[in-house]
Length: 247
Ligand SMILES: C[S@@+](CC[C@H](N)C(=O)[O-])C[C@H]1O[C@@H](n2cnc3c(N)ncnc32)[C@H](O)[C@@H]1O
Image (cartoon, rainbow, N blue to C red; front, side, top):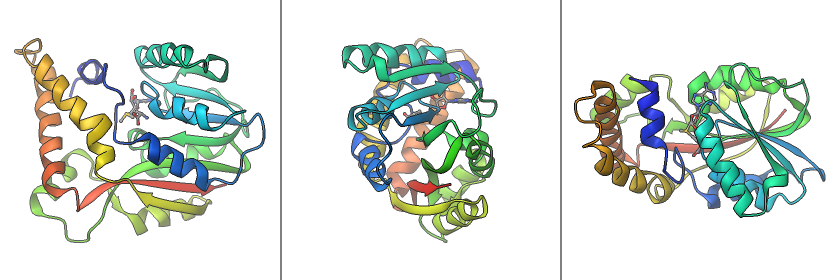
């Protein structure tokens, strides 16, 4: 699948993956209170719906938001300025597997819907060094909610994300990486629809004509439509889970 087509298609959405301000907030309040002036690293921030919400609820913190695609972060900075949050959010274009930070630089790491890019085990292991001792990590990851998923759902996810695990399997990986689990919760199906799939469907309808004949873009569009259809049918069998942990 062509990556630039993915970025362009997902540009203009309120967010680039499942999630909601309500869930971001619920995860944030599961952390123990962060020190005044706390530094948070948001990895794979996209246009930063969660970054902006975190900055608004974590009053004295500073968030460094990183992503591989600069235009997303340009939008984030525009919105931060509109909301009067510019002084507390900075952005950095960097790949999540090669981050230019010092060991122990952050009080918390946030990552909504992006750790799958580097891989769950690898992300937990590599990012841990950037956390202070006792620092927190809060992230969302896709997980199976059943041991016996329907054939169609299993086939779809085995093709695009074969590493998807159950919640207990993910928790095992977290513990093996040396974290203590503070809490976890499933994102409701509304967190897939309201700010993500509803807008994505509208976007796919509006850009389909523009990309007709461009094979890579067409395959991204077809794939996205299929992903939505699978979720519509099987949202009780898998979904996103917020995992909150401590180093
Ligand atoms: C599913 S989106 C999630 C975005 C945002 N956190 C949200 O929940 O709306 C994944 C994000 O990871 C970013 N990304 C993809 N590959 C990356 C990489 N190698 N390093 C950093 N970010 C990357 C994408 O640009 C995209 O913004």
